Image (cartoon, rainbow, N blue to C red; front, side):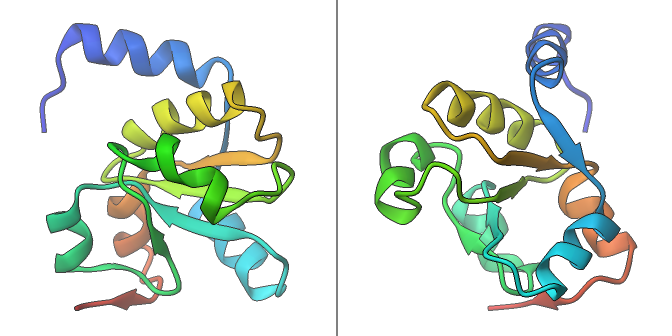
Length: 123
């Protein structure tokens, strides 16, 4: 997908304030049995087609509204992903503004997850 210049500027600005993790780091954290939560912020139709095994779905359009009910402890480790790591970076930035202190964006997003051979669930 080709992204507009304005969108990329917004994403790069957000990325200057957030932390990213790789697929391997994410899988290690999930396997360690920690309280990490993997959250898919893609659109409903993207989630329904397939998603990372064990992920929860809170789309970018509603996550700010619903995150406090889903993860009331603002120290909860949240790893967010979207299609390519752009929208999740924007969401990570907003969640940090809301007081969440342990938020990460999955570098490369869903595309990187699939390409790595990480487990996938289809609905």
